[in-house]
Length: 205
Length: 258
Image 1 (tube, rainbow over the protein chains, first blue to last red):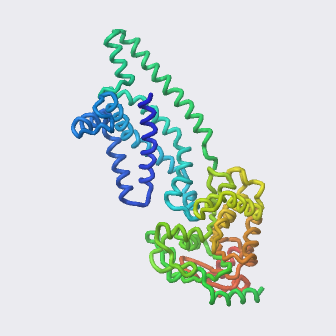
Image 2: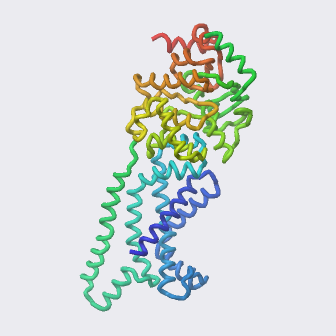
Image 3: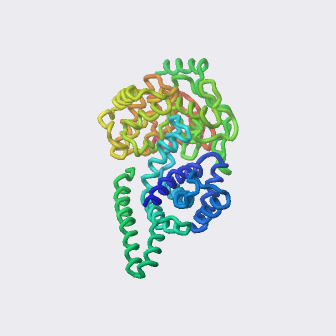
């Protein structure tokens, strides 16, 4: 849960900035945004998470200020890995949202003298987000389930917990069903609530 | 009428607000603006007419650089049009623009639409901005709609809000890019009346339109464009009763006699 929430917030921020870069006027940033999205979304998440642990921590000694405590540095690196990965999808969802905003909106905003960042944050993104709620819901649900991959680097999330229980209890089917049910309890309401929100905030034209 | 026109033309030589010098622009192979020379004086109302595809909208949009130009020069109030960034934004704040499709910010109320530029560009105090916005909305006759969203308004009301939004920046010149072309016939007049009033108050205006009635009654000068060129410029009376060029005669015969 904590892993999902932190990564969700992180990837929303970073994904929005990436989307801003991809629609911006500076070629270098556009190139960076495009390259980032295309590279990151095509790498399996497991590889990214393992790289965060083995590459960043074990080889380069980066622990994100958590010292040598395995539990906390693994957790922080997992948040980093999930954020890096999910933000590529967030970026694309928001960019799709931006495409639903008519060009005239940005033109009118420029015509009253707003700068590029003001146009983006005051006029275009507020409308793009409203259109992007549904695609972002998909991304959030995928993220919730992707947290299980963090088990690979020893973060005590659901999959790790489940492995422990299976080893100790041997009731494989029951435990699997229980965890599947647990995930549905998290993701189904997410989908329903955000679906409702999406209708509620839709921009009328 | 004639006397007024003469007086305005005298002003033209002494006080040039917008100057275009041999402006050229291409859309791919299409040469949309060909050697455009045009000077607009402070307080002058210039109406640009012509068949569709003649480049009149593009001309209007180059003046605040929503369209870039390939060659030539545009100056506004003596300053050359900046290329990008902060300078350009500052210039655009001084040039009001009204679009064919209104383009009110759909996620903001009417009042917020008119306040946004004042708050974010002019850095005005919130209370003053609201007072000014309400006064402008009253002036264009939509004061009672201030707290609605644009989608709840009729086209004519939306366009009048768009005019108020542009006026809130205290622009030196107002550009109108076919402001009534997307409106139902019965709403055209309410927008034209607001524009007439602006013209009478001495606002410098460049109006691209198909409304010949407005051109006759409010314009100091009519600019007729065809195929990317300015074919003819004249006072409205003269242009409509006695056009010099064949192209203009042809155009007028098609629109005035049915």
